[in-house]
Length: 89
Image (cartoon, rainbow, N blue to C red; front, side, top):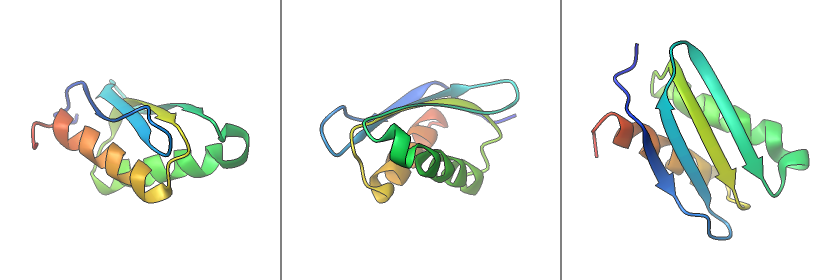
């Protein structure tokens, strides 16, 4: 089980993303709201999964509200939320 608490990162400004994360008993659940959901939804979810895997997160519910953020911004917001949830920053 991850040593994870509820945390968030980002804003709801244009070209940014807001990420909330909280512990979940098993697996990864991604809830995505995006202005480009139809076109890039799967790519955004894949990016979120990659970052969580890189950080060894195995049980989390994550909500991403995307306002047209670049991939690097989404990665940074997810990583920051995880690190805050672990008390690392």
